[in-house]
Image (cartoon, rainbow, N blue to C red):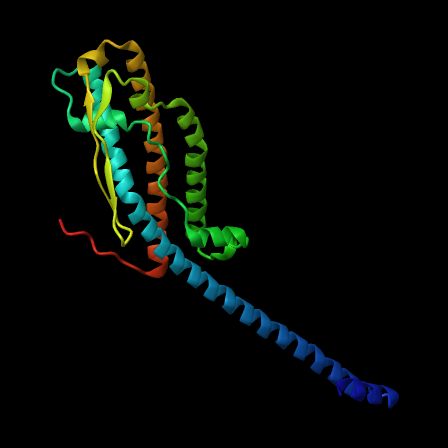
Length: 253
């Protein structure tokens, strides 16, 4: 319709009318583009809000999932450090069952779960730059880098660390194995294994002491890496709380 009108004005050499028609077209296109851009921006902002909320919920759940395993691993590391004093004759007492268990489990260096579904989606779709808040972007990048370093270091630790139960059965043995029961609801319960450590024999077995020291040192590296991942998650959680204006009740003392 506008095209026919422009042709008519052109044939009649109505230059003012032609200019007005041209102006109407330009203004219409400009307004249309602005409306489209506004709609696109609103969509991006809604997507940002949705991902921010998802990240918060999934980070919170991930921290809860990681906590029990990390707590046990920290206890094992404490047991290994305390055992060091005993094995190298710097402490004159009997070895506790917790310390003996720590030695038996000193080759368990699988990283606690560290995946976040929303973050996987953001990476896959190339939308990590979605967030206007630079602190969110920085916290996400920091977590990804810290996690990558922990994942990269694990193969080296696995290669060096050894199963002391299998390598030194004459000084470390299973007295009672682990018993596991799976309910119909899928709940797994288990009774912990009991180990026996021959402290006197361990102290004079240089090969065992060498292997123990290797495990103790590398278990410390393993825990250091995962504590850094947990600290990075805590910082990310804190930033997301601020962006969403959320507060969490402190646990009762």
